[in-house]
Image 1 (cartoon, rainbow, N blue to C red):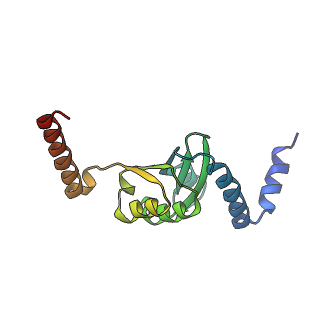
Image 2: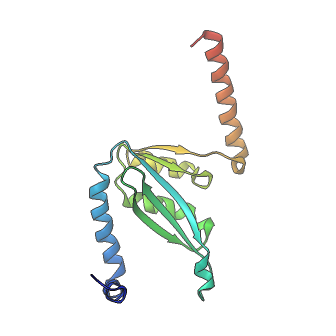
Image 3: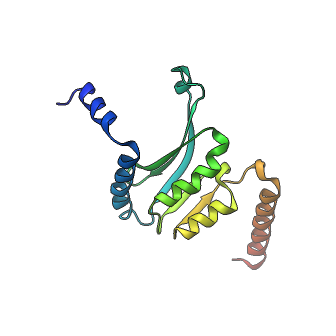
Length: 154
């Protein structure tokens, strides 16, 4: 059995960017077998990070494959607002063909939806009050659709 110190020494000696690249290549090999599965993309703030002597909290955007229960990739960002730049970068790293990508309201952006389509995937985006015009358009569309279905008995 390996000790905590031996594992720590091993991972400390690795070239981090090269390890991340190799890890993502391996994970993408698994991900290609998850066609039509859900990949949940979400940002989280690691609050304890700042209390450990770091100046700011750590923010990470993660892509999680729900079928295999594995993190496919992650991207660190300076703050929550930078998620919008990290999400497309993270999507570029992943094999998403035939997957369904879910994002919360911060990811409900035209360029992110286009990026998901470019990766031959589908998406479910959350619309909230942070985009009033778009939310209103979606609500009007759904009300119209409901009226048409009730009118024609579809």
